[in-house]
Image 1: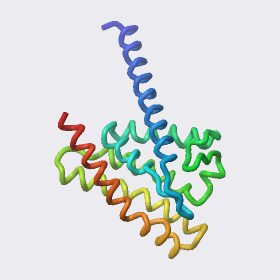
Image 2: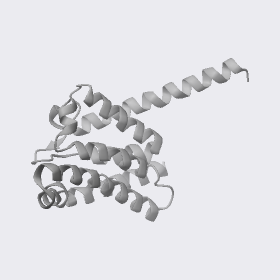
Image 3: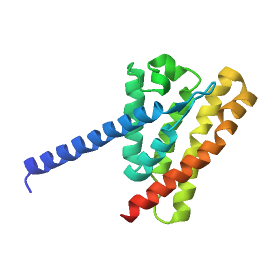
Image 4: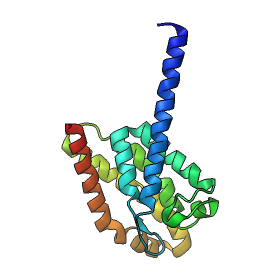
Length: 175
């Protein structure tokens, strides 16, 4: 293989990777618009999307997709829940959750093999995004209220979305 061929193949792989990451960011943007309005943090399908991006695409692709999504929103594209956009949306009550998507995608990408490990990693990934989310939200509403409104109210949905991510991962890896 010549240097030109190697360089072209590497360029094609890089273009494919970033194309997939862009597709992942679009999935996140779409999942943000499927929202149950709650205050101060809406319930969306984003966490399910983050788990699947990491689990199915791997940590690197999952994190790259989230990074693109956050950059798109920061630049003013209406990709956040309810069509929100810009730096004020990132600095608002949901900013910590949005940043929490990064470690969640990375952890989900570590699912590995075996049902028990996969379930544990998806659960850990889902819970990991609540740490910066609740901590950031506490600056707006206080810690007690942040724990109730920013975590406890989300536990049922978190269980359902984690189970859906697990079932999807298992089904996709069988085929």
